[in-house]
Image 1 (cartoon, rainbow, N blue to C red):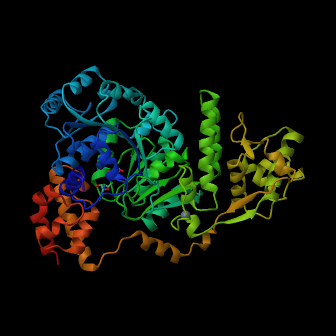
Image 2 (spheres, helix red, strand yellow; image 1 turned 60 degrees about the vertical axis):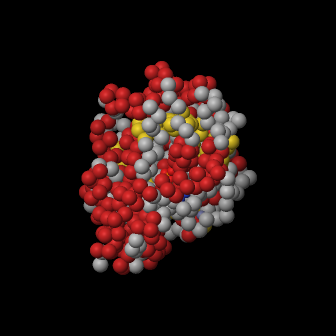
Image 3 (cartoon, helix red, strand yellow; image 1 turned 180 degrees about the vertical axis):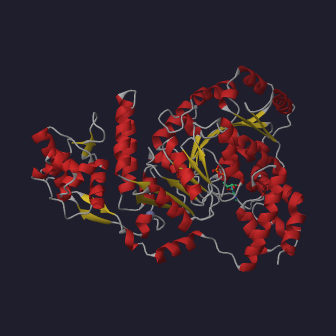
Length: 610
Ligand code: ADP
Ligand code: ZN
């Protein structure tokens, strides 16, 4: 074992209380300790923070961490302080006196880690400050923010190339949990890391179960999902608009699920308050627009639900990745329907900017739709988007309850010819709802008003249910065999590709949802059990007692519970029931500092529990 390897392993065990490194951690850390630059792609929960925290501790000087997540800096610093690491942050939430103290500590070489927001870092004052001290490394967290095509673009990130110009000898590490090959290249280029070593981990998060359901009454579906599978759990629900977020949070509360809204229309104080409650309280659901959650390192989020279709696979992957960071079972649930496709296609058509930009949005949406409509493994499809290949996973809805593929060519032809005839013969365009009424031969007021009962396509589709027709429409839209009319309001038109299907030159295989009634109560209850971690009765009692103790400590320190100990650590203590400090020190997550601070109390709790 080399000297530096021994030092970093010792730091891992002593400070963080972990036995061994995971994945690429060791290689990354050694590379940085030796002064190299790195670009790190690792999924959420993979353990990115240690990749710069340990080198910062081992190298002389302060590790400067650039992060856009001002609201989370306090918690990050608290977590490190609990571990006995000397950490601080500089951002706009501080008064000048506190900031001065942090600056002095940095200059005096008394900090291991310093967190700074990018806009702050780029000020001349801050650059001068940094020039006056010793820097161990620069870590650029959430590095995908530099990508202009990405979902979290931050213009300030573009200025970060200054770091390599001013400090060519200081190692830099950029980290992100999401990047396609194209985005990765963009990050490397803009941050001047093309010559850096790239560490690309598998993106797979095997503990997350991916599920995409057909949208009907989405609020009810969401409620049922939470009640049957995640009652009492912490979760995040994503919606696209403020109104939808407000409405859904209220609905959940009315039905006994404690939920808080989070969106850009709320004041900064309310947002910060809601986020802080979410981090600190057990069993709270936050209903949010995408403005919420980047970098949320709450480890025990048990589900992430999307009630609207995300705009890209990258964004979806990033958001669902916030579930189950602790490695325990978690669910990513998405409800998706015809209206989502119509709405998003229209939003893209109406969005300002260049054609190239719109085309890129369009292909991002297509990839997302491909994931929703696939009849093969979701995870396979998701990872393929990041150029990674795996076998079918056995932990997604299509693996567990395979949907059937059916030949939808004739059904598609019926729809396309209805659209064609209405336009050719009468110069009219309609939306899916009315077209379904025509196909199913329903004599509504609107049908009578337009005399659509006299069309030759009237009633030719009575063989399929309304829901089945909606499925066909949705898939035609998803595959761009139908287009949303640019002028109309969700009215539909043919595309160039429609012709092939109409002429019978192309067979169309479509996805049939597993019948709703087929979801017997038995399958629901087994699902519930799989998601729970069952402890033996006595260990469960010890675990509850330890949790209650942790809640007290967290409250008196003013930090989230997981800053004191993770559930996984308390669970292991409950199971092992250690009787000495030495035994306790071997439990994952119990480092030297925490052993000193809490060891005796933990042992007392274990002994006292029945
Ligand atoms: P990321 O930033 O990649 O999402 P984190 O750095 O927050 O992930 O790490 C995720 C969790 O895994 C944290 O609770 C961290 O303490 C834990 N962890 C990281 N590395 C190890 C390791 N080598 N052994 C055990 N736990 C680890
Ligand atoms: Zn699968």
